[in-house]
Image 1 (cartoon, rainbow, N blue to C red):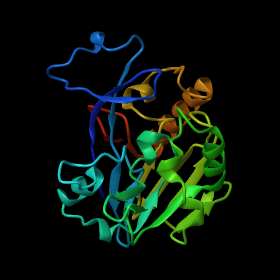
Image 2 (image 1 turned 60 degrees about the vertical axis):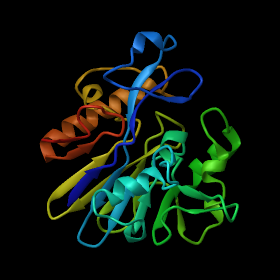
Image 3 (image 1 turned 135 degrees about the vertical axis):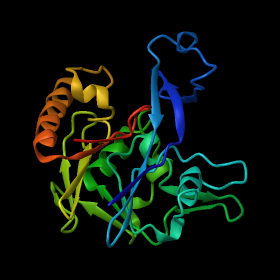
Length: 247
């Protein structure tokens, strides 16, 4: 498998849930509102023998020429958006779901940003996110998924195919899910926002922004120990320094 981090940049986020760009060389975190967290937004592309998979879709920002940023990041790595075959969604918070659709300003319509892909999202997550709404969820980011024939609404825990396993963990948000992708003895793990950074895997850490911070911590410890034994490759969506770690 080939793993490609698709970094959209570094941001701060505070209680307003707004992602504000942050320049690591010139900006001062102390000048941001108290409690601001510094995070990277980093979807991933994974190339297997039969698929090109995108895991989570970033903020949905566009380049000056109107190209969706996640599309440009893929193109920079030699992958066209039409080549993507699967899109896995851990949960529907803005920074993970913003690029699910692309808005066409001329036609005044929105279209799935990967038109040849099958999208996989948990049915309970769509229902809950729609009921919950702002500030954690922007319904316009994902409204319409449940009615598309390109979308598979996952139920419970299970397998998407012989290579992809999913598990609903909750913990960060009520129906957050994680993924394992296995091929030819390699196991890649994407823990989304339950396991967002390498440093959190190595230390006992309870975050106030998680729905159940203690459960998040316990799951990270469990995965870290299992990953060490089985030589997993970890993907970290919010890690500035270490997007990919392999034992």
